[in-house]
Length: 304
Image (cartoon, rainbow, N blue to C red; front, top):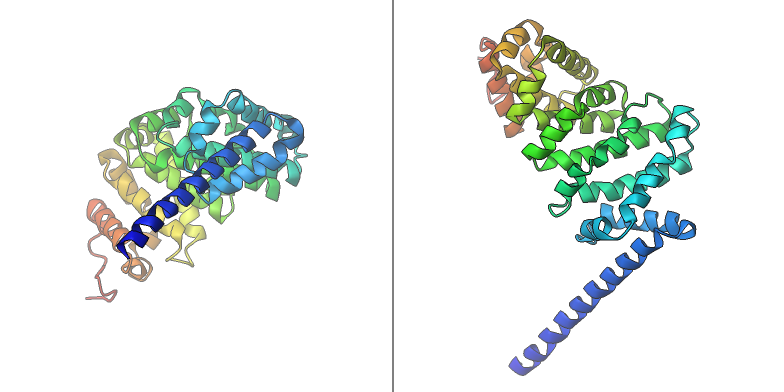
C-alpha cells in the first residue's frame, strides 16, 4: 500500500501542475488576443469571466506586465466617451467596457499591481462614467462596474489609495451615485465612503469643512430614509458605521447631535440590528458619542 501511495501522489501532483500550466497558457493566449481587434471582444468576455470567479489569481500581473495590454484597455474605455456625452450608449458597448473594468478591478486589488495602478492614475479614465446621471440600464451597469474598481482599491485600506482618492475628489462622485444609483450601486458607493472614513485622513477630510460635512450627512440621511422600511437592509449596516465614525470627530459630533435622523434614535428601528454584533457595536458607540443613551437599547431588543 505504501508503494502504491507513493506512486499515486506524484501522479496527482503532476496532473495539478499540468492543469495549472494549461490555465496559464490559456490566459496568456487570451491576453495576446486582446491586441487583435477581431478577437478582442471575446477575449474580454472570457477573461472577465475568469476574473469574476477568481479562476486565475495571477491574471493581474499578466495584464499589467504584458506589452501594450493596459493601453488597449484604456483605448476601450476612452472609445465610448463620445457616446456617454451624447447619451446614445448601447447595451453592447456598455457590456464590453464593463468587461474591461472587471479586468481593471483585478489589477486594482492585486498586491503586486495595486501601487502601479495608482501611480498611473488609472481611475481617472473611468471617473467620467461615475459622472453620468442617466437612469438607463447601460449607464447604471457602467457606473456599478466603475465603483467596483474603486471598491477593490479600498477593500484593503492603505494610505496611498486613500490619499489618491481624496486628491481625485471621489467622495462627491460616490455621493452622487448614492443619490441616483440602484440598490447595488448605492451599496458599493456607501462601502467606499465608509472605508475612506475609517482612515483618519479620510475622516479629517470629510469633517474639514462645514460644506463637506453637511453634503455627506444630507445624502446619508436621504439614503437612510429610503431604506427605512427595511431596517435590516445591508445599506443600513453600512450607513450606521458611517454615522458612528462621524460622531468620533468632535466638531462633527456636535453638528450631528442636531441632525441625527430620528430613525437612529428609535428603539424599534435599531434594536432589530442586535443580532449583528458588529453593527450593534457601531450603534452603541454612536449613541454613546451623541449622548442619546436615554433610548432603551438593550441586547434583547425590549424596553427596560
